Image (tube, rainbow, N blue to C red; front, side, top):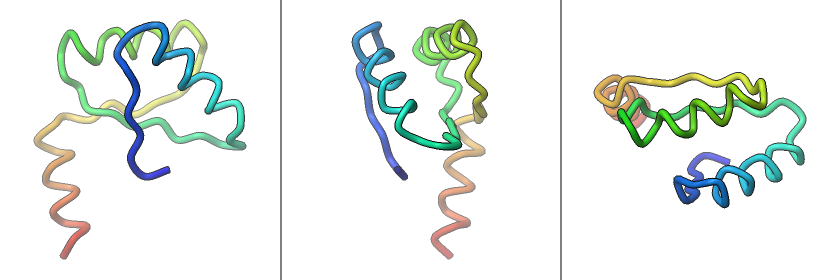
Amino acid sequence: VNDYAISNDMVGFNQLLGDLKQVTKPQIIFEATGVYSRRLQAFLDMHELRYVMMNPLEAKRKTKDDLH
């Protein structure tokens, strides 16, 4: 999945957890957006899931570089 959106609450996080169980080696990457990303980060840590949290400016630059 290239782009994935969930609600920023337990309902969305549990949806994500269920979907991740269907993937052999999930790669979780999200932008560090302050209070919004902290909830997801805490949930992933609680479930011992590995992730990469990117600076939003770095993510935007990386996306632009991938398009060229």
